Length: 184
Image (cartoon, rainbow, N blue to C red):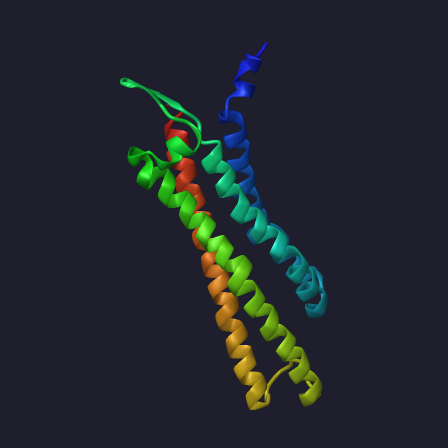
């Protein structure tokens, strides 16, 4: 029978939270998003993503904070390293713990509070421009100059968000490798 006393330590919660962070990122980016893009019409896909992204980026922002709070202690030849915020902020964890978790947090907060709302505003403007032009933003050219500018702006914001999300995922994997090294 497993030793249940481990459940009063932060370790198991840290590992489950890490799994949720990486798993939700991989699932949204490589499974749910592409399937929804292929299965839904553009307006339906847009509505779905507008509903999912605030929740997704809020989760991706909150989990690194939880990971900092539940950072597990580690036995070393000199004794135990601290757990929680003390371990998260420890000088010897600056590059292996602090840097990746802060990076993941900042990237996802930026997507939640800056990139996401800016993209939504551009999409709203494109919808208004579609009404003025009598043509969808994704219809074949020619488009009005205003629509071409909005499409470029949307492409830039969407590209920035996707790049930031991919960077966050890669940093999450890097942190996972650092975390796994502690289990040896």
